Image (cartoon, rainbow, N blue to C red; front, top):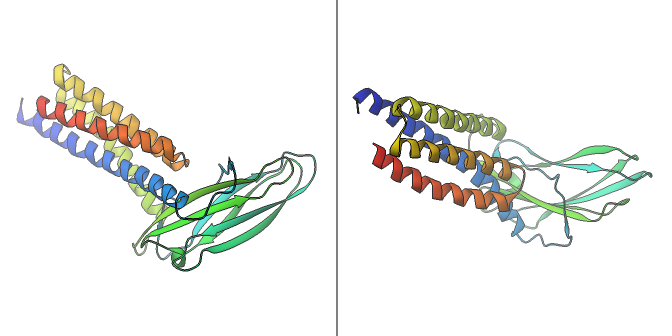
Length: 240
């Protein structure tokens, strides 16, 4: 193998590894905080999930984070949708209750603010929302969490977008450079590129599932990604 191709392969491995690690960090942060919220001690009273509850994945200690949920009235009568939100705290759990009027067929987004004062366990803000029954909608509840970073001059959304873009760029450019450096693709080199593509797909799927609050799928995909990493390391070592 020429030094030029070896340099391209090494760069491909580095960029792809950065993309994988950043993607798994974001997916892991989303899954971990949601799991922490589930077991925080808020309790469980409903059988139906509040699937529209969303927390930002990341937040910085100097900003105010926004928790959101979407409420809909599919009945033919106006209703008052009552939601009780429980927020983590080093002391007693903070409780906020809102009542949102909904006309027939109307959908509204409801928001609640959290700050650094709600941090527990050092860098986590954990939330549970309990939506009381209204119209033909049963009682529902959902959990989510936020990882708080001690980064000045930035917002959690800025950090999230930056890391997400770096992850996507690392995955795509890394795969592209491996194809260039491994041309013609055959044997272990071909096996490695197949494993890289599968790993990129699992990381992307893991991020999507975790960001949507599907933490069970997030955990499964995270574990599958770790298994594929071991396969890639073995194949790259043999192909180099």
